[in-house]
Image (cartoon, rainbow, N blue to C red; front, side):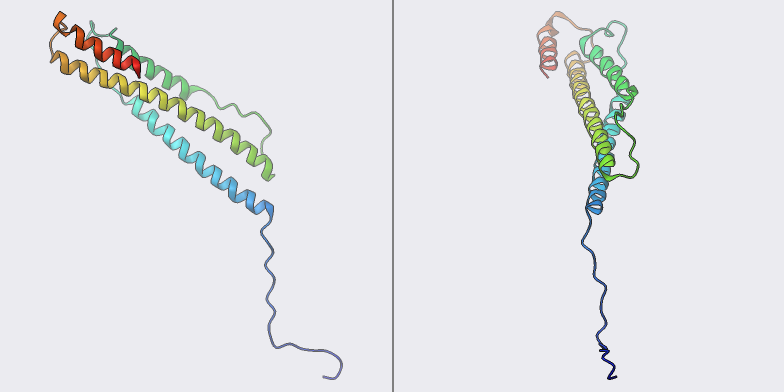
Length: 161
């Protein structure tokens, strides 16, 4: 043991490298992907709620304002659903920055769609409140001149929203 070698009885632990930028980007991108899934889930829920609205007006009620709004909301929701995603930009090839950019584009598109469907849903909800109020005012009867002020008030309320 006199050959100049020193032995240590304490084991050495390997050093753990600091997290790299790519690891941070990957975790942020994973969080973005989860947020996109949440936004799309909200969109899907609202889309289903609008699709499940059922109002069966009589032939003379068909063109009443609230029923027209409900049909318009259903058409707008379907048109929004049919819009394709406009993916401008290169496909990610494993580069964290490209993946980040694509996820940001997808998140922006999903957020805009969710915002639009929320607006449509609120408009449809107002029309459903109009329908409920109208049925309460009429009580199953046909509209009479005595109902005109109340019907006008609920129509104005719906338009204001």
